[in-house]
Amino acid sequence: MSTVIEIPADEHGVIRLFAVDLEGDAARRFNRRNGTWPLRDALGAETLDPAHVECFDLSDLAGLGLSGYLDEGLGVPTSELSGLRPRLDALRGWVAVITSRAFAGVSQRLTPRPPLRLIATLHEERPPVIFERLPSEAAKGRLSATGTAPAPTRGRGWIAPLLLVLALVALAAFIFTVTR
Image 1 (cartoon, helix red, strand yellow):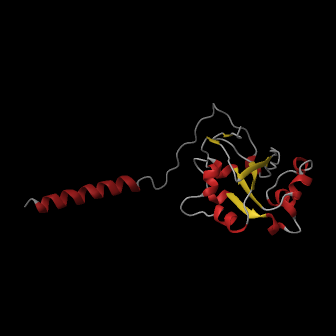
Image 2 (tube, rainbow, N blue to C red):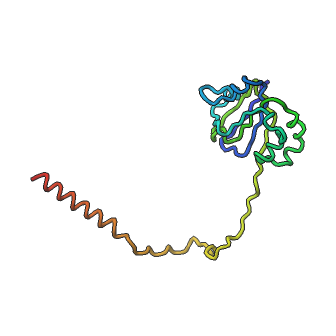
Image 3 (spheres, helix red, strand yellow):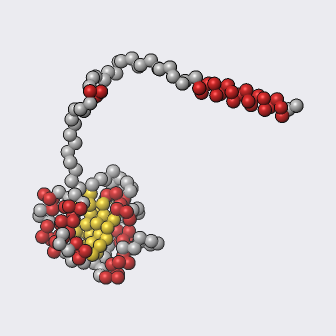
């Protein structure tokens, strides 16, 4: 039975890692982004934005390793990688790293097939939201739903009606001269 991956339209912060079981020129052609795209077809994806897909040879990560790249480059929490590190760093050959943004907010069902093999589904680290007081004095005070709206200030509100009157006078003069 093949793997089925459901992508919800509102998915954010998910990174899917696939092994690409191809070598050399075949792997490079698999990553082409013009015309038909074998990677999209192998995923069974309806929509796939190439700007949010990386397909590369792991030898390009010499010294950093795949787990280091995921940690430092893509913000996957160290705690999530801890149990996967040995397996990730033992991989050889090509991989495809696909982020949630690659699906462009389109709900779809992926059915990856060879040469793709799902290795891991990871999550980008999201810092907690902290609500702090604003430092500006202008931010102090209270909001109330029952308050009265401030009176409109008089300024250049007379310009639009004046222009309208001038346009109507010009139009009347034009019609008068044309009909004579």
